[in-house]
Length: 396
Picture 1 (tube, helix red, strand yellow):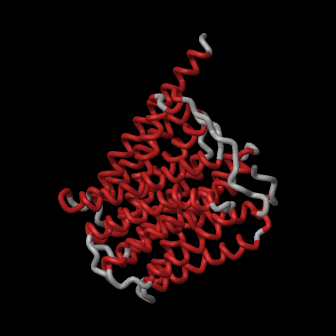
Picture 2: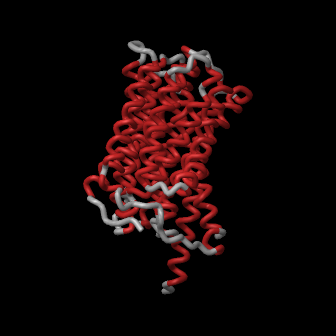
Picture 3: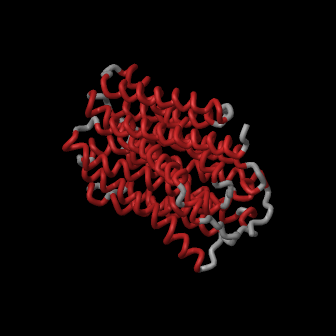
């Protein structure tokens, strides 16, 4: 069981962990245009990079977790080992001079992300079990978004002044600091990986509503990581924009997405969410049209802001519906949804790498355009089903 631990220290460690998770997951999108310039990689190699990172997350979530649990490792072991692996992977990635050697360090970085997500989920489980899920998840979303924006701003600030490897070496120092404080932190002293099992019935897990929510979660994650992974490369290839400008617009996209998530936590009750769902869908469609047709910098900025805000609004709507149907707040369930979102979403950039050549670079924007409409239709179906269920339980 997870015992009570000092709350301020728990908040600091969990915030730092989510910040790192955001930075690591946005790293590939910020580095792709730089690698295309310096390493001359093609879209197939970029797809292999996304795939290696994705497989690493799966290994870190499943295999890495079982290994450390088998050897008696606790939450401290997860955080320290994952942070050290992330630092080593970043240093190895900074030393790569041949594009064929990019996937191995990205695999280990993905493994570190999976392990760090597991440790962080257990770290915040106490607050979730105490009924503080909304504020904790809101803080986690802000910290995650701050990490995505920060790594893009760092890549933008360093480009043209230093080699991209310097950016990775500077970033490698952050998980080292986290590992040092986690190793000496007292909050991990009584935290183990034992917790009551979560029992879900077949009727709950195989219901049409659960399937709709799972598909909606995967589609909106695909939107997020497709744009976050390829936007900085799409803009130079589509409109001839410089790498620095495209990375800066990518940072604006992540900033808008984070603001959308924060805004979504203040949405009105269920009866008004259909209206917000319609507005989010319209914003996504308009943003995609801007990114497809507008060559002006102001138009691409407007498109990135609209699309980021829309995706940021749709994601919390999906998670809220999942939380209302499965109110367990178990750390294993939380980590499962988080890792599912990461792995499912990162498959989209890998798929884009194989579709960009036969269908054109515009597939990067067409995918979120179509997926946003599908997600809205799925969520609308769940909303209608929820209202019908409520009326059937409370007949007039």
